[in-house]
Image (tube, helix red, strand yellow):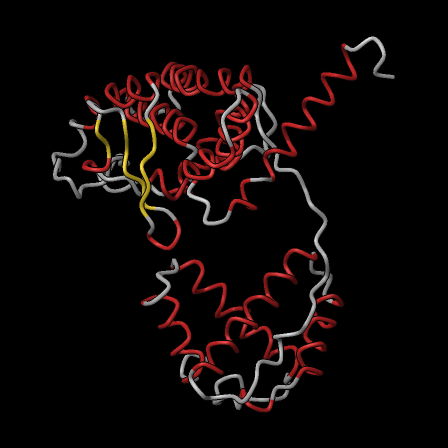
Length: 318
């Protein structure tokens, strides 16, 4: 459906006005393609769609079709939200008379507490890159000792920075040389919607980053403020996917659950701050959450932890 003017203009709006990421744009596009495929399977997917003919009954049929395909409630909610946003745009542009998804209720999502790592687990993980690459060099897994040194120092610095500032993996690999001020101990992070915020660099993160920068000089001579901070062996920007593959190896080396992700470090950052007495508003600012309600999930985590400790140690807890 790339030639559909409604879809084309909507994606342009997301990119240029809302500054959504390419990944978000592709998700919206695929949701609209799926909507048409499920409700109008006999129509040519390359033809121009008459979006004005869609009514609330067809919107409900879309939800039922998604449920029949076995999608999780969270996925259905996201797709309904995408369709609602699309039709809101069409109404604003005067292309359709009303939004058929406006009053549509999607399946209720059960609140799931995000997983996080304990402080001892964090410490085990952070010691894993050095242990892994030492073993890799000794056994010949790494092509050269220089390759091993780059990977070890870079990934150690990445882990420290993600946990130190509560960064998303995309924010961490998106850092440039000029994003980090080692003297002041802060970094300028560009988050969702290209919104910038200031994050703190803890002393371990600062030490790891200084060590990595010395090694980085052998792989990239580009030290302009706009040059990527974290590079691969080709001297180009490291991707989040590449780091996630390496993280799986470090988790195995540290004896930690393989389902831990870089985002779990962000969850751990928030949980550990609240456990130590940080106020919710401050944590919201550090995470870059637009709404406080998004941050409040971590108060439930801390409450669960406190109840667990209480039941274990209080003589009259049971």
